[in-house]
Length: 213
Image (cartoon, rainbow, N blue to C red):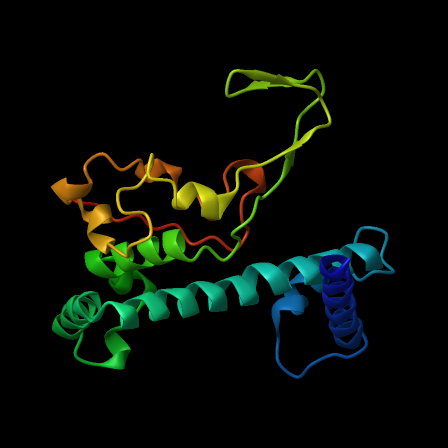
């Protein structure tokens, strides 16, 4: 009941913000400017008001809370492991001499940074529960079991990422596991999918993978 109340609270908060934006025309373009280029709620070819509200609610989740959660959790684990923090600082400070050098492309080339972010997502996934899917018409076989159509299924992220069958020392912060360290050679790195997979994966996903080569 408390979770459902929070869900309604989030929905109403997002809806009110969308309504305020639709009621005015800002001096500078913003995110909703692009959406409205496809048609206002009263246009036959545009999004309905309900679709505007749903889009706003989704954007609030995908682009704000999850990012803040991931960065907070990763920062916590770096502070709890000062040796890892030192390695990260060394990499960044040796690669860049000014803030102007920091771009998405140049940061993505920093292997230890990417490994830290991967390990941060494993240790502290922004969506720790399931990202549910519904079994399609006709049913489907999942992990050797037949599941009838219409059944809601999902993989629990936090439980998966802390499973010793997938990750050695699963409760410890080891970015090295993403860099080909032989100590973690048996890790099932593909088990980490914090953004989910398929056509319904996170719309705010930024693709990065640590490449040991």
